[in-house]
Image (cartoon, rainbow, N blue to C red):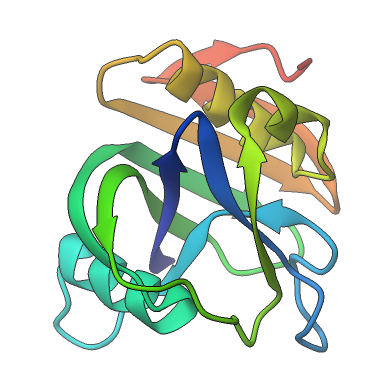
Length: 158
């Protein structure tokens, strides 16, 4: 299982979203996601988050919080523990990302973007301002077949 971070940076009722269109052989090709990435050797989740946000956006986070951990299980790709963050403070100038196109999207419009089905579940949890959570998402191919919130099975219908 690899360790990763993902962050939704908020500004004025919008999230900074990354439309993954630039990398070849990208598991997330043409999906809209937050910013983040894989841990480097000996990094903590916070260190990985700050580094990845700076590398992908040019921004330095000044106010952020970990909202939970999402466990991804798949029959086609490596499992993943993803530390999910939101951020409300940052400084610096937004720059181009080599993984896709960055765009500020109204939060209420995010669920209508091409997202993974499981992402829609954690967006709902973020909108509900749930306290820290553990979410398990199991995929067969691109289909979400099982979801559990804090150890209890939940509906995969979004």
